[in-house]
Image (cartoon, rainbow, N blue to C red; front, side, top):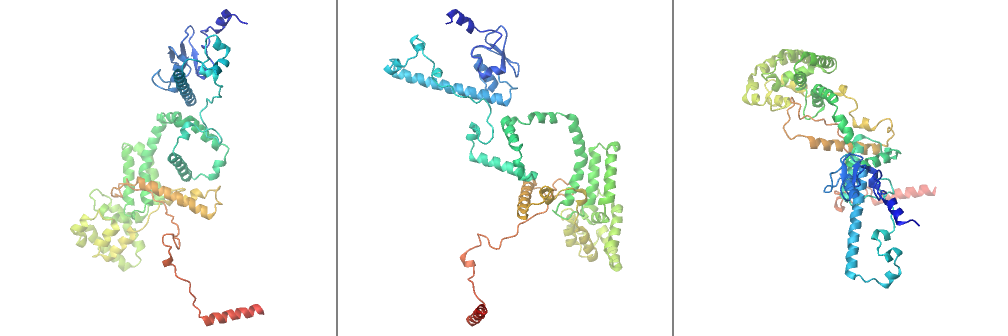
Length: 499
């Protein structure tokens, strides 16, 4: 049996080791300052923590709870969660002990015979056992909850409302549909570990990677340069593929304004914008340019009569070529050329105050239909040219929703499922488009309010819907044959059966 002296020497604190009760999980994240009994250093941020109740102060520091000590800003989320659970357990134990003391105080200090009979040897020496010593030791879980099937849900998930759960499902479903991910991707053995890892880290996931990407100034300078050059061109392509109104009368001028915008963004330095303009002109001349674009620009009164427009001769050549190609009758050609003079000089009905005021307000087709009655041949030609559709098919890759969904992996989708996927994706895109769409008036040349509208897929209407179905709308069955004819036909059938 050890003597009291030896027991005291064994329990005396050593400044090089952790203080008493070193089995506490919090000591795994701190080290003791040599020569000081109540002073430790956090292993995550290096802050010194001292004073009475050092282990509790260390837990508050790691848990990020204000009031006792400054919070640690470098502690991992799992450790922070673990410390919060330990502090919550301390609060529960403290409230339980307080409730026990109050109950004992209300009963009195006289022990019952049962208590005297079951008293432990330590009680006989005058030191009552602590409440924690009389309770069985429970297994603790010091790890953040996971989403693995069968695991115990955390407090946060248990208290989540049904609306929050439904919202999480909808957000994930939108991502699956928008990204065109096969549903069997959830069967991958790496899918659930990915969800577990994200849930364990919490809202802070991705901040470190985001700081690395956002802090790369050289990368973002290059991105800015690319956007400065390509944004005006993308706006033109969106104008071409839009169906708000025919854009044949606007494309020529829009392309010129896009090149001017690029030159302005690159500080009007030929050494900067020169290579890009040469590539744009080469692509425009070989693939996109057509005399129809010049003719549409010439016949658009909002552009042709604008004082800032200076390319009348250039677009006039395209107009002449278009007239000679589209108008086969030579007599009609002569009439069109003759009536062009009235348009260029604003003679007759073209010179009225209403026609002049509506040049930029009405779209070109409507303007010619309203004010071109004095020149019927030119009016018919102008409406035909300005009503032509434009397309950027040669400049696009996989814009089709069907092409996104019908990839090589999913080329064997049954037709009904394919229609469902396409229908959901189209509705999602149209919903996003409606949210982003501006209520301002459309200015085709500004290219600011043009948005891409993909092809629309609509379901075939049902023959009868639940709202339209009622007994009054259903006609009773009737026969077009008389009774004698029915008897005769039934008799013939009976003879065939007997034979």
